[in-house]
Image (tube, rainbow, N blue to C red; front, side, top):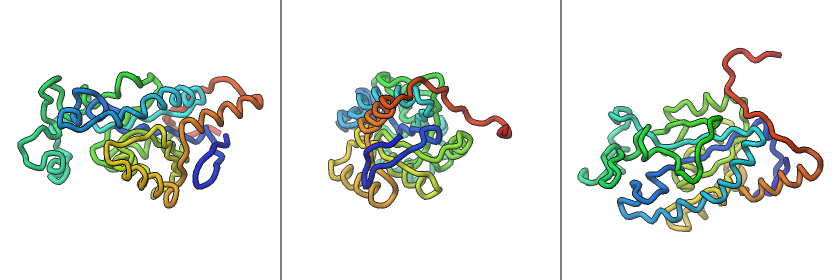
Length: 245
């Protein structure tokens, strides 16, 4: 499938792709979540919801794995270094990682809690893959790389929030360990100032890979289908044993 992108158009093999959706979870994107509680406007973080609602079903129909990469800590926070705990609760007296939110009682960024769940508007399909992360990058101290290698994936489509933080950190690590990376700009957003996203988009296209969009992906699928290829494809699964030849 050939799609419009920057710095140049690219042709991707969808059978070797996966879509990594980063941190589209309640603590970052929902009213009553952690960011909302500490006074951050979560409106910008919700902007990718509509584009993702259109893009994800199309990718599923093509058999492209959807990987939900959410921040979901251990309940005891035992694997988090002091620096990570400090940066999200600098004075030691606020609502930080693992503390209960006053409204819902959910623990901030805790795996298995409402805080770490994907927002209702998107929804997780039974065939999707969920991976918890504990840092800005989803590759550090997680099974993400092993899952992607077992799927025989070479190209990663990135979406989610915050594009200048967790999305960029994960995308950068992916590029550094040999994946081809494509940032879907309209499916990504940030609660940071606008120039943070502008700098991220510039650097991805300049240094790491390609910048495209969910809209461009859908248009490319429509163009391809108009030329005669239609029909759904079974989603790929991680290999459980030696590959048959």
